Length: 183
Image (cartoon, rainbow, N blue to C red; front, side, top):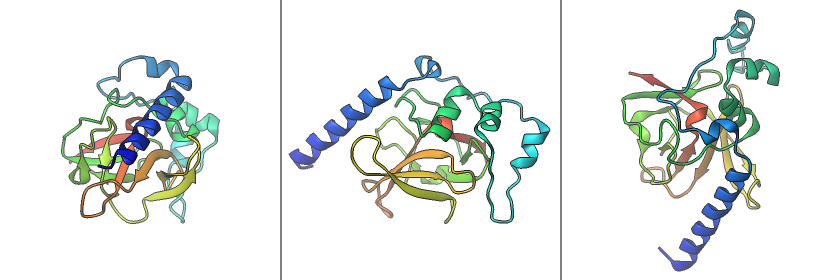
């Protein structure tokens, strides 16, 4: 790796850590649970989680707060980031798929998961075309490609062009945004 690239990556990592510490929630201060809790879903909200004819789901912030924990809401709805290496799925190796914690749409398959060394779950491609949407964010002062669930717009993480073959992509995803479904 070129020294300039290494310096840039270290600067980006340091900036992300400073940003993350300054925006930490109370749930971030605790170690991750063995399995992130799921809140019960009231019937009136469960009806709204059924995708419409465009495969979309729309809830208000108050409705999302009813079914998501504080950290899940922070990540999915406020575009937050959880701590690296202190999350449920960064070292998870079971066979299955990873669905959006908000709406349940399956986003990634364990067969495309790999250890990127970043401390977050990383995948080299989505489960199928169209399940991930992209937008540009400038939260850290430079452009990054943010990825979100195409059904509910729940923030998942970011995609970078430093992943393994065959795609060369690294989908760096927050565990709080995912729910594992064993095969």
